[in-house]
Amino acid sequence: MGLQFKELVVKKEIAIADLRGKVLAVDAMNMLYQFLTTIRSPDGSVLTDSKGRVTSHLIGLFSRTTALMEQGLKLIFVFDGRPPEIKQKTWEKRTAIKAEASLKLKEAGENGDFASMRKFAARTAILTKDMREDAKAVITALGLPIVQAPSEGEAQTAYMVKNGTAYASVSQDYDNLIFNCPLLVRNLSIEGRRKKAGTLAFQKVNPELISLQEVLDNLKLNLDQLIVLAILVGTDYNPGGVKGIGPKTGLKLLKEYGTDFKALFEKVEWHKSYPDLKWQEVFDTIKKMPVTDDYNLEWKKIDEKKLLYLLVEEHGFSEERVRTKLEKLKETQKEMAQKGLKNFF
Image (cartoon, rainbow, N blue to C red; front, side):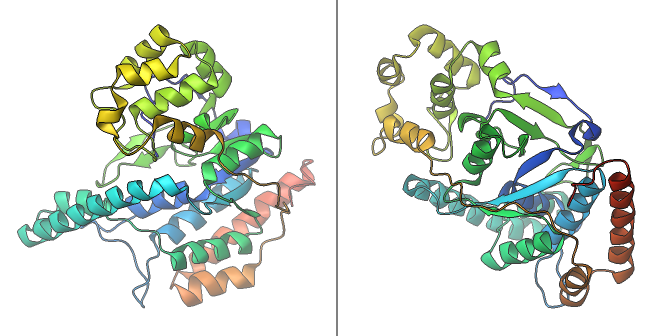
Protein backbone atom coordinates (compact mmCIF):
# COMPACT_ATOMS: atom_id res chain seq x y z
CA MET A 1 0.00 0.00 0.00
CA GLY A 2 2.65 2.47 0.98
CA LEU A 3 0.52 4.95 2.94
CA GLN A 4 1.82 8.51 2.75
CA PHE A 5 2.12 8.87 6.51
CA LYS A 6 5.82 9.70 6.72
CA GLU A 7 5.35 13.31 7.80
CA LEU A 8 2.73 12.39 10.43
CA VAL A 9 4.39 9.46 12.16
CA VAL A 10 6.42 9.65 15.37
CA LYS A 11 9.54 7.49 14.98
CA LYS A 12 12.33 6.44 17.30
CA GLU A 13 15.69 5.41 15.91
CA ILE A 14 16.96 2.17 17.37
CA ALA A 15 19.94 -0.14 16.98
CA ILE A 16 19.74 -3.71 15.72
CA ALA A 17 21.06 -4.78 19.12
CA ASP A 18 17.86 -3.45 20.72
CA LEU A 19 15.96 -6.22 18.94
CA ARG A 20 18.25 -9.09 19.92
CA GLY A 21 16.31 -12.11 21.11
CA LYS A 22 12.98 -10.61 20.04
CA VAL A 23 10.48 -12.30 17.72
CA LEU A 24 9.72 -10.20 14.64
CA ALA A 25 6.92 -10.85 12.14
CA VAL A 26 8.21 -9.93 8.68
CA ASP A 27 5.88 -8.81 5.90
CA ALA A 28 7.54 -11.19 3.41
CA MET A 29 6.07 -9.77 0.21
CA ASN A 30 7.09 -6.25 1.17
CA MET A 31 10.67 -7.36 1.78
CA LEU A 32 10.92 -9.43 -1.41
CA TYR A 33 9.62 -6.55 -3.53
CA GLN A 34 12.28 -4.32 -1.97
CA PHE A 35 14.97 -6.69 -3.22
CA LEU A 36 13.37 -7.00 -6.64
CA THR A 37 13.32 -3.24 -7.15
CA THR A 38 16.79 -2.46 -5.76
CA ILE A 39 19.07 -5.44 -6.52
CA ARG A 40 19.58 -4.95 -10.22
CA SER A 41 22.23 -4.55 -12.90
CA PRO A 42 23.44 -1.06 -13.91
CA ASP A 43 20.93 -1.03 -16.77
CA GLY A 44 18.09 -1.80 -14.37
CA SER A 45 17.60 -5.45 -15.33
CA VAL A 46 17.02 -8.05 -12.62
CA LEU A 47 19.77 -10.52 -11.77
CA THR A 48 19.21 -14.02 -13.14
CA ASP A 49 20.82 -17.45 -13.06
CA SER A 50 22.12 -19.42 -16.05
CA LYS A 51 18.59 -20.57 -16.87
CA GLY A 52 17.22 -17.03 -16.92
CA ARG A 53 15.40 -17.34 -13.59
CA VAL A 54 15.29 -14.22 -11.44
CA THR A 55 17.60 -14.31 -8.41
CA SER A 56 17.54 -10.68 -7.18
CA HIS A 57 15.03 -11.52 -4.45
CA LEU A 58 16.97 -14.60 -3.31
CA ILE A 59 20.26 -12.71 -3.11
CA GLY A 60 18.68 -10.06 -0.91
CA LEU A 61 16.73 -12.58 1.14
CA PHE A 62 19.71 -14.81 1.94
CA SER A 63 22.08 -11.93 2.64
CA ARG A 64 19.80 -9.86 4.87
CA THR A 65 18.14 -12.76 6.69
CA THR A 66 21.42 -14.43 7.66
CA ALA A 67 22.81 -11.05 8.76
CA LEU A 68 19.81 -10.46 11.02
CA MET A 69 20.02 -14.00 12.37
CA GLU A 70 23.65 -13.33 13.26
CA GLN A 71 22.39 -10.47 15.42
CA GLY A 72 20.09 -12.80 17.35
CA LEU A 73 16.77 -11.75 15.81
CA LYS A 74 14.06 -14.43 15.67
CA LEU A 75 12.26 -13.92 12.38
CA ILE A 76 8.86 -15.15 11.22
CA PHE A 77 8.00 -14.66 7.55
CA VAL A 78 4.34 -13.92 6.83
CA PHE A 79 3.06 -14.35 3.26
CA ASP A 80 -0.06 -12.85 1.70
CA GLY A 81 -3.12 -15.00 1.11
CA ARG A 82 -6.23 -14.22 -0.93
CA PRO A 83 -6.56 -10.46 -1.47
CA PRO A 84 -9.83 -8.61 -0.74
CA GLU A 85 -12.12 -8.40 -3.74
CA ILE A 86 -11.95 -4.60 -3.90
CA LYS A 87 -8.18 -4.84 -4.43
CA GLN A 88 -8.79 -5.99 -8.01
CA LYS A 89 -8.97 -2.40 -9.24
CA THR A 90 -5.63 -1.70 -7.58
CA TRP A 91 -4.09 -4.58 -9.49
CA GLU A 92 -5.57 -3.26 -12.71
CA LYS A 93 -4.04 0.14 -12.02
CA ARG A 94 -0.67 -1.39 -11.14
CA THR A 95 -0.74 -3.49 -14.30
CA ALA A 96 -1.33 -0.33 -16.34
CA ILE A 97 1.56 1.42 -14.54
CA LYS A 98 3.87 -1.53 -15.21
CA ALA A 99 2.83 -1.59 -18.87
CA GLU A 100 3.58 2.12 -19.22
CA ALA A 101 6.91 1.65 -17.44
CA SER A 102 7.79 -1.20 -19.83
CA LEU A 103 7.22 1.06 -22.83
CA LYS A 104 9.36 3.81 -21.31
CA LEU A 105 12.02 1.22 -20.43
CA LYS A 106 12.15 0.08 -24.04
CA GLU A 107 12.42 3.68 -25.24
CA ALA A 108 15.21 4.40 -22.74
CA GLY A 109 17.05 1.29 -23.91
CA GLU A 110 16.84 2.37 -27.53
CA ASN A 111 18.29 5.74 -26.54
CA GLY A 112 21.00 4.25 -24.33
CA ASP A 113 19.68 6.20 -21.34
CA PHE A 114 20.89 4.00 -18.46
CA ALA A 115 19.57 6.28 -15.70
CA SER A 116 16.05 6.10 -17.12
CA MET A 117 16.42 2.37 -17.72
CA ARG A 118 17.17 1.82 -14.02
CA LYS A 119 14.24 4.00 -13.00
CA PHE A 120 11.62 2.40 -15.21
CA ALA A 121 12.93 -1.17 -14.81
CA ALA A 122 12.30 -0.98 -11.06
CA ARG A 123 8.65 -0.13 -11.77
CA THR A 124 8.16 -3.33 -13.77
CA ALA A 125 8.97 -5.66 -10.84
CA ILE A 126 6.74 -8.72 -10.64
CA LEU A 127 6.94 -11.39 -7.96
CA THR A 128 5.74 -14.61 -9.57
CA LYS A 129 4.44 -17.73 -7.84
CA ASP A 130 7.67 -19.60 -8.63
CA MET A 131 9.72 -16.77 -7.14
CA ARG A 132 7.63 -16.84 -3.97
CA GLU A 133 8.05 -20.62 -3.69
CA ASP A 134 11.83 -20.29 -4.14
CA ALA A 135 11.88 -17.71 -1.35
CA LYS A 136 9.84 -19.95 0.94
CA ALA A 137 12.22 -22.84 0.29
CA VAL A 138 15.22 -20.71 1.30
CA ILE A 139 13.44 -19.43 4.43
CA THR A 140 12.53 -22.97 5.47
CA ALA A 141 16.08 -24.20 4.85
CA LEU A 142 17.32 -21.42 7.15
CA GLY A 143 15.15 -23.00 9.84
CA LEU A 144 12.71 -20.10 10.09
CA PRO A 145 8.91 -20.41 10.41
CA ILE A 146 6.50 -19.30 7.71
CA VAL A 147 2.94 -18.16 8.37
CA GLN A 148 0.38 -18.14 5.57
CA ALA A 149 -2.03 -15.26 6.03
CA PRO A 150 -5.64 -15.82 4.96
CA SER A 151 -5.56 -12.42 3.26
CA GLU A 152 -3.24 -9.42 3.67
CA GLY A 153 0.14 -10.21 5.21
CA GLU A 154 0.30 -6.82 6.96
CA ALA A 155 -2.91 -7.54 8.82
CA GLN A 156 -1.62 -10.94 9.92
CA THR A 157 1.68 -9.53 11.21
CA ALA A 158 -0.27 -6.82 13.04
CA TYR A 159 -2.46 -9.47 14.65
CA MET A 160 0.56 -11.50 15.74
CA VAL A 161 2.09 -8.47 17.43
CA LYS A 162 -1.24 -7.59 19.04
CA ASN A 163 -1.71 -11.08 20.49
CA GLY A 164 1.85 -11.24 21.80
CA THR A 165 3.22 -13.81 19.35
CA ALA A 166 5.70 -11.25 18.02
CA TYR A 167 7.31 -8.14 19.46
CA ALA A 168 6.91 -6.04 16.31
CA SER A 169 6.04 -6.20 12.65
CA VAL A 170 8.74 -5.55 10.04
CA SER A 171 7.79 -3.62 6.92
CA GLN A 172 8.83 -0.54 4.98
CA ASP A 173 5.20 0.55 4.65
CA TYR A 174 3.04 2.16 7.29
CA ASP A 175 0.03 0.00 6.37
CA ASN A 176 0.43 -2.18 9.44
CA LEU A 177 -0.64 0.74 11.62
CA ILE A 178 -4.18 0.88 10.23
CA PHE A 179 -4.45 -2.86 10.93
CA ASN A 180 -3.93 -2.02 14.61
CA CYS A 181 -0.28 -3.07 14.84
CA PRO A 182 1.13 -1.94 18.22
CA LEU A 183 4.78 -1.79 17.08
CA LEU A 184 6.31 -1.45 13.62
CA VAL A 185 9.99 -1.65 12.65
CA ARG A 186 11.19 0.02 9.46
CA ASN A 187 14.63 0.14 7.81
CA LEU A 188 15.70 -3.18 9.30
CA SER A 189 19.00 -3.43 7.47
CA ILE A 190 22.40 -4.36 8.84
CA GLU A 191 24.22 -2.19 6.32
CA GLY A 192 22.81 1.05 7.74
CA ARG A 193 22.01 2.20 4.25
CA ARG A 194 19.35 1.64 1.65
CA LYS A 195 19.60 1.65 -2.11
CA LYS A 196 17.29 4.12 -3.81
CA ALA A 197 14.98 2.26 -6.19
CA GLY A 198 15.82 2.86 -9.83
CA THR A 199 19.28 4.30 -9.10
CA LEU A 200 22.76 3.22 -8.11
CA ALA A 201 22.77 5.64 -5.17
CA PHE A 202 22.47 4.77 -1.50
CA GLN A 203 21.06 6.73 1.40
CA LYS A 204 21.92 6.35 5.07
CA VAL A 205 19.16 4.83 7.17
CA ASN A 206 18.76 3.59 10.71
CA PRO A 207 16.15 1.14 11.99
CA GLU A 208 13.03 2.91 13.26
CA LEU A 209 10.55 1.75 15.87
CA ILE A 210 7.05 3.16 15.52
CA SER A 211 4.46 2.83 18.26
CA LEU A 212 0.84 2.99 17.14
CA GLN A 213 -0.25 4.45 20.47
CA GLU A 214 2.36 7.21 20.23
CA VAL A 215 1.20 8.00 16.70
CA LEU A 216 -2.43 8.20 17.81
CA ASP A 217 -1.57 10.30 20.87
CA ASN A 218 0.55 12.67 18.81
CA LEU A 219 -2.15 13.15 16.16
CA LYS A 220 -4.92 13.14 18.79
CA LEU A 221 -6.85 10.54 16.79
CA ASN A 222 -8.33 7.14 17.53
CA LEU A 223 -7.73 4.10 15.32
CA ASP A 224 -10.93 4.55 13.30
CA GLN A 225 -9.93 8.13 12.54
CA LEU A 226 -6.47 6.98 11.46
CA ILE A 227 -8.11 4.51 9.08
CA VAL A 228 -10.28 7.30 7.66
CA LEU A 229 -7.18 9.48 7.25
CA ALA A 230 -5.56 6.63 5.30
CA ILE A 231 -8.63 6.33 3.06
CA LEU A 232 -8.61 10.07 2.37
CA VAL A 233 -4.95 9.93 1.38
CA GLY A 234 -5.23 6.63 -0.50
CA THR A 235 -4.93 2.92 0.28
CA ASP A 236 -4.54 -0.24 -1.77
CA TYR A 237 -8.31 -0.30 -1.99
CA ASN A 238 -8.73 3.28 -3.22
CA PRO A 239 -5.39 4.22 -4.84
CA GLY A 240 -4.71 7.93 -5.02
CA GLY A 241 -7.21 8.83 -2.33
CA VAL A 242 -9.49 11.85 -2.67
CA LYS A 243 -8.13 14.38 -5.15
CA GLY A 244 -6.44 17.33 -3.49
CA ILE A 245 -6.25 15.79 -0.03
CA GLY A 246 -2.85 15.03 1.46
CA PRO A 247 -1.99 13.95 5.00
CA LYS A 248 -2.09 17.45 6.50
CA THR A 249 -5.39 18.40 4.87
CA GLY A 250 -6.89 15.05 5.86
CA LEU A 251 -5.78 15.56 9.45
CA LYS A 252 -7.31 19.04 9.50
CA LEU A 253 -10.62 17.62 8.27
CA LEU A 254 -10.62 14.97 10.99
CA LYS A 255 -10.05 17.65 13.62
CA GLU A 256 -13.08 19.46 12.23
CA TYR A 257 -15.45 16.51 11.81
CA GLY A 258 -14.24 14.21 14.60
CA THR A 259 -15.96 10.86 14.17
CA ASP A 260 -18.77 12.11 11.92
CA PHE A 261 -17.28 10.25 8.98
CA LYS A 262 -20.44 10.41 6.90
CA ALA A 263 -20.39 14.20 6.95
CA LEU A 264 -16.66 14.26 6.29
CA PHE A 265 -16.90 12.10 3.17
CA GLU A 266 -19.84 14.16 1.93
CA LYS A 267 -17.72 17.30 2.41
CA VAL A 268 -14.86 15.92 0.29
CA GLU A 269 -17.37 14.67 -2.33
CA TRP A 270 -16.15 11.09 -2.17
CA HIS A 271 -18.68 10.01 -4.82
CA LYS A 272 -16.92 12.15 -7.42
CA SER A 273 -13.59 10.41 -6.89
CA TYR A 274 -15.11 6.94 -6.47
CA PRO A 275 -18.58 6.73 -8.03
CA ASP A 276 -18.58 2.92 -7.88
CA LEU A 277 -17.05 2.46 -4.44
CA LYS A 278 -18.47 3.39 -1.05
CA TRP A 279 -16.03 4.64 1.56
CA GLN A 280 -17.70 2.33 4.10
CA GLU A 281 -16.64 -0.67 2.02
CA VAL A 282 -12.98 0.39 2.18
CA PHE A 283 -13.28 1.10 5.91
CA ASP A 284 -14.92 -2.26 6.65
CA THR A 285 -12.38 -4.12 4.49
CA ILE A 286 -9.56 -2.72 6.61
CA LYS A 287 -11.35 -3.22 9.95
CA LYS A 288 -12.50 -6.76 9.22
CA MET A 289 -9.45 -8.15 7.41
CA PRO A 290 -9.26 -11.93 8.02
CA VAL A 291 -6.42 -13.20 10.21
CA THR A 292 -5.62 -16.62 11.61
CA ASP A 293 -4.27 -18.45 14.65
CA ASP A 294 -3.58 -21.51 12.52
CA TYR A 295 0.21 -21.53 12.54
CA ASN A 296 2.97 -23.42 14.28
CA LEU A 297 6.10 -21.48 15.18
CA GLU A 298 9.25 -23.51 15.39
CA TRP A 299 12.82 -22.34 14.84
CA LYS A 300 14.92 -25.21 13.56
CA LYS A 301 18.57 -25.80 12.76
CA ILE A 302 19.80 -24.65 9.38
CA ASP A 303 19.57 -27.29 6.66
CA GLU A 304 22.94 -26.57 5.08
CA LYS A 305 22.65 -29.31 2.47
CA LYS A 306 19.30 -28.01 1.27
CA LEU A 307 20.54 -24.41 1.16
CA LEU A 308 23.57 -25.35 -0.90
CA TYR A 309 21.32 -27.21 -3.31
CA LEU A 310 18.84 -24.33 -3.63
CA LEU A 311 21.35 -21.52 -3.93
CA VAL A 312 24.45 -23.08 -5.46
CA GLU A 313 23.22 -25.98 -7.60
CA GLU A 314 19.87 -24.52 -8.62
CA HIS A 315 20.65 -20.83 -8.94
CA GLY A 316 24.41 -20.58 -9.39
CA PHE A 317 25.38 -18.74 -6.19
CA SER A 318 29.05 -18.85 -5.21
CA GLU A 319 29.50 -21.97 -3.09
CA GLU A 320 32.39 -20.37 -1.22
CA ARG A 321 30.32 -17.31 -0.31
CA VAL A 322 27.35 -19.37 0.82
CA ARG A 323 29.48 -21.71 2.92
CA THR A 324 31.42 -18.79 4.43
CA LYS A 325 28.18 -17.03 5.37
CA LEU A 326 26.73 -20.18 6.93
CA GLU A 327 29.88 -20.89 8.91
CA LYS A 328 29.90 -17.36 10.29
CA LEU A 329 26.22 -17.67 11.20
CA LYS A 330 26.76 -20.98 12.99
CA GLU A 331 29.67 -19.54 14.95
CA THR A 332 27.73 -16.48 16.11
CA GLN A 333 24.72 -18.59 17.05
CA LYS A 334 26.96 -20.88 19.08
CA GLU A 335 28.44 -17.87 20.88
CA MET A 336 24.97 -16.49 21.64
CA ALA A 337 23.82 -19.85 22.96
CA GLN A 338 26.79 -19.90 25.31
CA LYS A 339 25.85 -16.41 26.51
CA GLY A 340 22.41 -17.53 27.51
CA LEU A 341 20.29 -17.50 24.35
CA LYS A 342 19.78 -21.25 24.66
CA ASN A 343 16.30 -21.10 23.18
CA PHE A 344 17.35 -19.45 19.93
CA PHE A 345 16.36 -22.49 17.88
